[in-house]
Image (cartoon, rainbow, N blue to C red; front, side, top):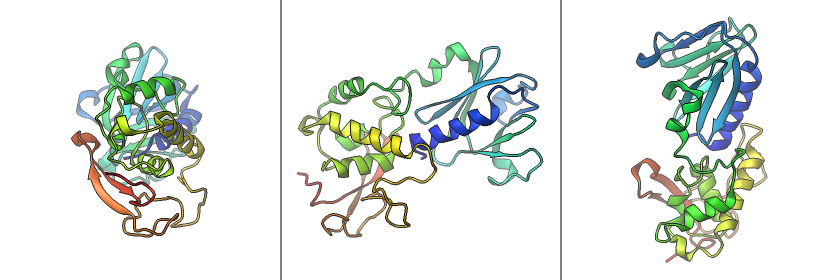
Length: 263
């Protein structure tokens, strides 16, 4: 599943290409909106919200989309060949005189009145990369369930929106926490939150994601997707397991048993 910084960058690029321009083509290839037509309507802004994308139009209409595991938006010039996959995977096309945005394998495609967006994203916690970022509120939400595992709660979008499996694993490594540590035993919750926030802000302006500071192939992460490889700090083989009380958030988890000791 794309991390929040990936969605943030997609939203920025979509906003730059579409905002302030009237649409020359509007095509939603989902049953509930197959006849909807906003051709000629101006896009006012494209806003990321956690892992959701909100495309707003003049007149108070919003197109909501979610990437989930495999969704993506591709930007290209009108007339260029679509490159994001076979045509039957296209779920949305938004075009103006200069740009064409083609959405592949998008999920939760909805048109709603802009003033009713909360029906779709109102359940989300503070957005790590959004203007509503509130680390104190995130701390309160995390500590509200002291028995919950810290690795599980970091992926709960109702607690904080945008953190995905990559930043969960890397933030826990950098703060020396075993993923299965109960929240009540985490000595410094604000430090964990601040670390995830810092990592995501550092990566939001480019598609490459690094938590080590290196962009060299094979050196971009501390433990994420490095199962059984030596820890970059101590050389102990990185371990792997599946974590998640809620099935929606169950993900492969990576940790160094020496740098992140647990019970």
